[in-house]
Each structure stands twice: as structure tokens, then as C-alpha cells.
Length: 131
Image (cartoon, rainbow, N blue to C red; front, side, top):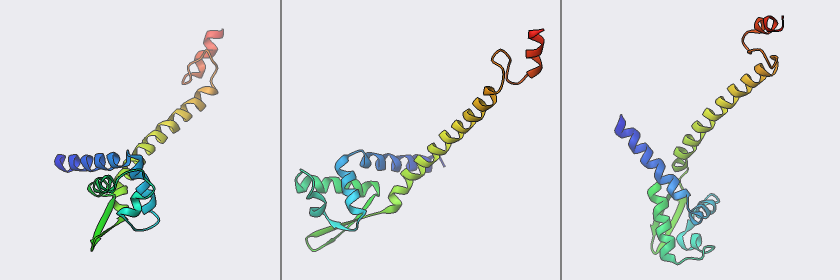
């Protein structure tokens, strides 16, 4: 069980590492429009074809991209399943934060109606202190 969780975390680390580079994010944006060759992916970037190939290898290792070689042309395509691990991780964090903010909002709404010198959970106490 622990080994499975650690493998998932390593996969997630690779996805975030791949997404950390602006050039790779640009490549992913291009691939969201459809498959492209490595040279097409590198065209808008100021880098050598060898550097583009290295970035594509990082994207492939992370599971974000698949590629297929036909003759001398390597064509890449987006692998939507590769993004799911990051999407799931972010979604879990968002849900946790939203629940905490909802509880904070409820607490603030409850305490806003209470007099300033009385505890929010004991309304009779404020009458005793003013007598």
C-alpha cells in the first residue's frame, strides 16, 4: 500500500516538474489543439531541436505526452490521462480549503450577531454582567 502511494507521489512530482517549465507548458498548449511534430513544437521556441527533443522526453516521462515515430518524423500528442493526477491533487486541496473557508464563514456569521462583550455560545452571561 505504501509503495503504491509513494509511486503515485513520484508520478505527481514528475507531472509538476514537467509543468514547471514555460516552454513545456507552451508545447502542451500547442498539443491541446492536436498532434504536432517535434519540429512544429519547437518552432515558436528559441531553442535547438535537440533541446526540444529533451523537453519532449520530459513530457513523455511524466505521462503528459505520447509520441510516435514514422520515418524521420516524431509526432506528439497530448495524453489527457497524464493531467488527471495533477488535476485530482489540486481538486482535493481546493475542496479542503473551501470546506475550511465555509466553516470560517459560518463561525464569523454566528459571532457577528453576538454582543461584543459576551461569549457567542452563552447569551445569558451578557445579561448577568450588565446587572
